[in-house]
Length: 259
Image (cartoon, rainbow, N blue to C red; front, top):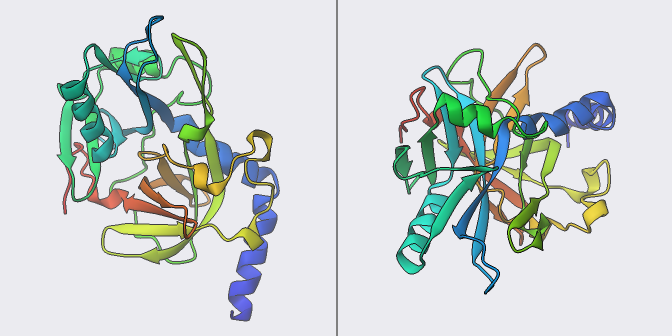
């Protein structure tokens, strides 16, 4: 490692351990919400419920819920197999198929149009998911290897069912994940244990392998005066501690995609 890279990483670690790091960790969660889909609650039997993550953005053409195509595919499969299936963003039930703007299984992305009434309801409950992100300009500049991004979402391992009709979903975020590789329309962040500033998920005994369910979560980069929305989580490899993200640059302002 070159001296300049070592100094930059050490500086980033100090920032991550301070107030900026705390701010960066919390920032992504302001624009994301847990998604639940499956059978309606029943006292008579255990119901099947899956969860994922959506990102709330307005790229210039109105409010959009961004998630992964495999989340929508799993919902479609449940509709085929089960009766009385619901799709709920936070506490708001909606029909993602009827409101679908675009879906691309190759990119593993889906965008859902939201009404102003739905946005008000989705963002009304607490600080998490309380805002719709609006970028300074669109699309964002290209990332570089070594950039530090903040990301967040809702791991399935933090989902609790205190009652048959109640779900409590914990969130997880990271304020300083380093971009390790960049391809044409995706990038990855590898979690390097030697650079962790604080215990990973210690409060809930969370391990890296427990990050399933974060698909659809956002990644942001802090550019001194403003933030850029730069990616959407679509896969995590527990074998290699790598988070894979689709570049937000493939999303057009109206929610359609360019390959």
